[in-house]
Every structure is written in C-alpha cells, then in structure tokens.
Length: 366
Image (tube, rainbow, N blue to C red; front, side):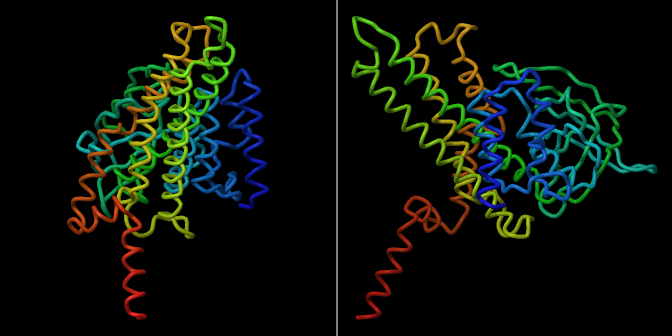
C-alpha cells in the first residue's frame, strides 16, 4: 500500500470517529474498515498489520465501542478457513485448549467446550478460534446461531460485551489447518489491544492537559502548580512509551508474516517486542488512569464527563488477552529457555552484540 493511500485511509477513519455517527459500527463496516486486512480483491484494503494497529489507535483515542480489532482478525481468519458471508465475525482465545474438545463423528466434526468472555459474542455472526499447537493446530469457525450454542451475556468494566459461549455438540462451519497456534493468536490479539490502549492513553493525556489549563484554584490554573506539572509530564512519558511499545509490537507481526503474507520463521510469541507490547502499555495504562483521576478529582468519575470512558476501557483492556503479569512470565520463560545467559544478555543489552562485533573487527584490522 502506498503512503498516500495509507494517509487517505487514516483521514477517512479519523473523520468517521470524529463525527460520532449514531451507528458507528455500521458506518465503519460500510466503509470496509472491518475488512482492512483482506486484499482489495476480496473487498479489503490490503493494509499491513502495523497500519491496522494505527487505525485501532484512532479507535482507542475516540473510545469507540465497536469490535473493530476482533472483526479485522476475524475476517482474516474467515478468509483463511474459506468461510464466506460472515458479516460480523469475532475471535475467542482458547489457549487452554483442554476447555475445547474437537471430535469427529460419522457426519463430520463436533465441538464441545466453553469459550469465556468472547468480545461481542452475542452480537457477532461467527466466532473463530484455534485449538492445539504446532502443526496440529486447528482453526475452527462456529456460527453464533448454530444448534448447540448457548450464550451467557456479560460485560467488562467499560460496558463492552464479553459473553460466554457454551458449545454442546456444535457442528462447526469450518475446520481447517490453522496458520498459527492458539498461543500466537493470543499474542496477536494482545498487540491489537495494546494499540487500542495506546490511543486511549494519548487521549487521556490530552484531556488532562486541557483541564489543567482551564481549572483555576487559588487564583491560577492548576497546571501552574509544580506537582500537577510533574504528574502530567510523567503521563506524557507513559503515553510515548505506550505508543512506541504498541508500534514495535505491530511491526513484529509484519516481520513475522514477511512478504508472503503467511507466518514465517520463529513464532510471534518468541518476539521480545510482541510480548513486551502488552506489558508496557498495561503498565502505562495503570499510571495514566491514576494520574488522570488525581488531576480531575471527583468530576472524572461522573457519568457526564468523558474521562471515565477512557479509563474504564484502559482498566478493562489491560486484563484482556493476558495482563502484564501473564506476558512478563511468558517473556521471562522464553528468555531463560534460550541460550542460557547469552540470550538474556542480548535481550537486556541489544547493542552489546553489535559493539562486540565492531571491537573484534577493529582488532582484526590492527
């Protein structure tokens, strides 16, 4: 995709979010943003994963209550599975695949088990998830209205649907070899959440700066007080760090897929940038929420004020698809499972290898 096309897509999305149409999701679907990852020949825009994450950052920056991230990945998986007519797909995490049992019967496949807290599970048309690992991983697509699917409605702190789907002998619409395993899908979804969080943190910072310049106390704006200035400066550093971490994570997805559009090389879960994205944005989200509500005081919690639309989402998204503790453990185990202290050292000091190589070359030249 050319830079000009990318900018046009970005501007179009920005206008839609800024206009705040009553049926935002319908407008986004009509504009094709939910299929942005698909090639143009299949009704998409052929954007990279990094560009898709840029669109998600805009959605987070406007607290858009839409399943854009889930639909983007859902349509990509539907295309991989050969499923057509899925107007509003979502994805579910099934890392603990013992919860899901895929068995064969005389007349085809059957799926049993529970998919907890599926984003927009009750309003989607199809759910895509992956079970198994390695070459045995299977991509499963289930229609929401299929016989044997029962749904228990739920919501996260921000009020977004997180529904539990119980599958009892459900005939899946498709079962296909998965492009990657369940853990890689979890990692990919975590990076997309990081992009949403980075956008929400950026907007939280803007709200704090605006309020600190307008709110007058003791005869001057509170933004003139050193303590408030320090807090907002800290929030600005957290916003920058979250953006950088989410961007690095999205670029790791593109590197993983390579030019062929299919996963190549080591799994996404082996990427330090991919695992770190949710860790760093989650940490930034915690500090951003604390600083924002300290700056605004009680007014930030009121229903009439917009701040809570961002902080509630940050608190919710922080825990979805693995929180900081989960990904920190994953990252630590991955580093320690590598080439002993050498892998850990390269991760902690990435330029050490380059510096050592330069020193050796200089010595050889002498």
